[in-house]
Length: 127
Image (cartoon, rainbow, N blue to C red; front, top):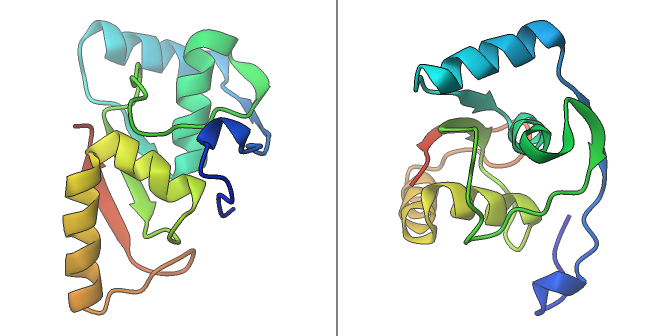
């Protein structure tokens, strides 16, 4: 959803419910212990994985990820190209770095990539 406040602390982030199974939790813990890469497919998955780090494996999260957020779990992200002034654009900017995202979006526009939910996707590494 678009952010309508200059002061980001005033933005009401929507809640999303998530559940991470014991088998998936074990795989995540093993990957973290072995320092292997954890790739989230989609921003909802990323928010769930990061939320589970502090909130447990089942909860409703309204985690609002903006530049400056310290990622604890996810190392890479596959996601689509998001709308301007959206919380999801802020999330990918926090993840890959604002300047990287600006360059990626400039390239996508120049190459006429498709944006939004049914468009092209990108693979991002944590900055």
